[in-house]
Amino acid sequence: MSITGIDRITHGVEDMAACRAFFLDWGLRLTGESDRGLDFETLNGCEVAIRRLDDPALPPPIEPGPTLREVVWSAEDAVDIVRLRAVMSARPGFHEADDTLFCLDPNGVRVGVRVSRKRPVEVAGLPANTWGASPRVDTPAGFYDRAEPIEVGHVVFFTLDLAAATEFYEALGFVVSDRYPGRGNFMRCAPRGGHHDLFLLEMPEGKRGLNHIAYTVRDIYEVFGGGLAMSRAGWKTQLGPGRHPISSAFFWYFQNPAGALVEYYADEDVLTENWVARDFAPGPTVFAEWAVAGGLDGNTRRQAAPPPTAPDPARPKFLTDRG
Image (tube, rainbow, N blue to C red; front, side):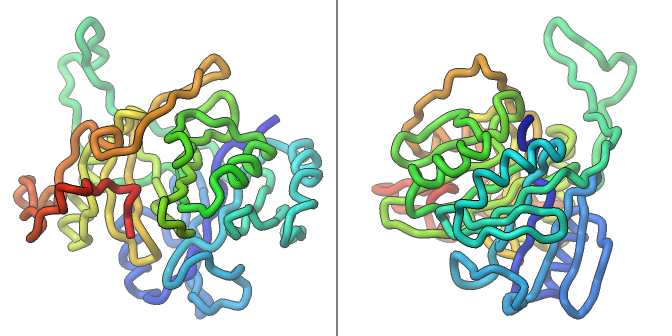
């Protein structure tokens, strides 16, 4: 019995038209459009709701401006709901609606859990030839013109109390995969699964907010194809493409009109109950083994123009220092 991933996320936004254009370019399918907002889904039916910032149905935001307002997680079955009700019912904001349990986590984010409404989907990445294993013979690898995200893979929040937030999610069944001791915890939904479904960060200056939301794609080729398509459409890269040393995943981050950053990623590590969490000191080279500053130009397929000013060498910045 366990939580299996993210089933639905809800943004509160200022610019509905920009968000509509962005998420269509991102590769999501538009399933609903009304005065209230927009509804999208990924290939496996993971729901992405876009609502107006002042929608009274939304919980209070944890930061000013457009941001993520709610995360609904997938439970395997009704037995999980019974177990999780016992944990969540003692939390502030607990209520039940639309067959979903809701409460507030210690960071003030509204968290929901429901039996998953995602659907099975048959997708496969392009096979990669490695030394000693060549699954692709007499066949080109192929290319992607754009991305079609499979699901929302993980969310990353700045939190004011890392210990309290970690304890809350552990009570839901999450497991710590790796740590920045005293600074951040990578957490997966269950002992067996991808490297992380949630990353919690406590900044020295103290703040709450969204760092980024990550969408899973098939393989590294789709990370590149999706990123180039977004670049051609005029959306701004924050960092990427690149590769994370901690999760091994390939990434590409873009600025998101729905709040903070959004990421394509693929090829993350898969862990089991035998995994022993590791400790890392946060820093640019731990965050990215390599990364392209400014992204790639979608037309020339070459590095875009570098930023006009160099960062302060006395305090190297990396993506977890956003804001």
